[in-house]
Length: 279
Image (cartoon, rainbow, N blue to C red):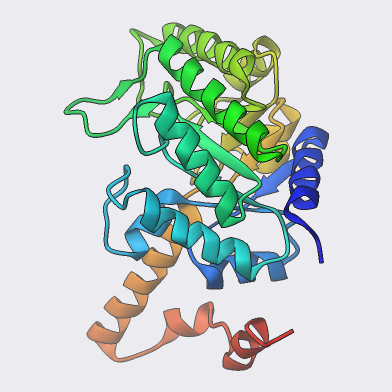
């Protein structure tokens, strides 16, 4: 049986070698499907987990409930699992350290930690120095646990459209990225960035590996990797696509009593039973 330490080493190697396409699961079923299709590692999607359990995004589900789901996902697959821990469920470095230790206890071998402050009336990021201290606390906690945890520092500069213009946004992103790497992060995650020219510039300016997010209309994974990204995450988008499929099934059934949308992507009962069979 592969130990958590071995899974952590596997995940570190996957991120370091690059061209890592990381799907994001929101429950055991989605995680098993991704694993069955041959993905070498799986991330969790905090928004997907929250939506599936009746919460809006942005830490409303709470640390304990989120990490219970992370634990369920980690226990149901044999590949490394990266936990989306949002902003760490508390502003203080000690809060982040507690969340990291709980993530490791749940079976995760990597975490995403974002710099957006939740619970604010307007979209705000933690001050650069404060976020660096929070990332440093995450690294210390992982070291104390004896695990080479892969820490992915997410910055929401592009996702929130911060700065007076694109160049200001770019400069803020580079400053944050390099500060976060110096504080102990292994990788920087920049969701919302899809312009290939700017991606090339960013990857050249950041002193460490860059993670980008797939989304409708974004360049393909090969294009993103060629531009310099080391990892591409599917994020919340598969879960939203599933929700869109359920909506289409519902609308068709209600309007015409037919099942074309359900038939199109049907996952067989026998396949599902095999996916969850005892090994």
